[in-house]
Length: 303
Image (cartoon, rainbow, N blue to C red):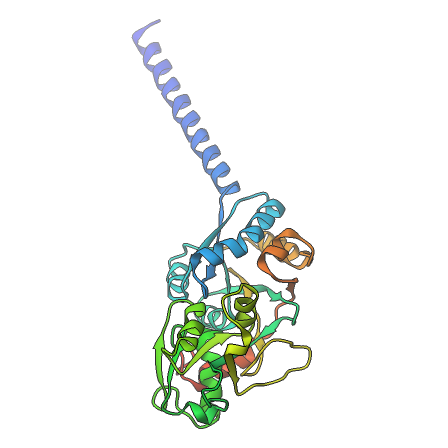
């Protein structure tokens, strides 16, 4: 082989090698894209461990339906918002307040709403110690209250604060609110005399009673309300239950598969039983939570 022929042959081989590496890189990229995990952020009203245990079955169920792994990320409301802004999560399962705030700032869509034995709505409970004399909203003036994150927690602050405001009680000035990290701890603080009242979501005191943590006779439901078809203790109006939201970068066909899987979840399925839900229903409107947040001047509805 002559020098010029060798040079041509060598250049030809280098091009072949470059093409081969380019093809391999493209193939690996395609495989990674096809098998990319989906990250599902879930808010943690009773702590990260309880959230993971409760919803891991749903993640497994969706993974099987989608043929790709769905990872649970138990996060606070603020961390969910930060992760969503950074494009680090794909799906969000959280209350209607978080959902409303998320969709006011970022593109996405509610795929379905959680359905429980009391339906696809929930509310807030104001808990006082039995015998304290606190039974009405007016009794809370000047009292110490423990809540979840102010301006962020729906069933642990927003719903109850809105009721106070409608009754002419300023939740920022007329009561003394201290934040806690877990709703169970808020109830215990009231029973132990560390606070006059607590803001928690509907269903919590019934769950704590079933778990042997409290006796329902130990607590008073302040501003007790009754709603047709709703059997849990209630102090506020009802709002949309937790929502499953897909952010806009999730492919349309993937979102449709997730929605179909959620709506197909039966009450008897292991995932539903583990999560203590009946399944999911079509998205429930969010208008009244937006009205509450606007009235309380909670971002992004504070303009």
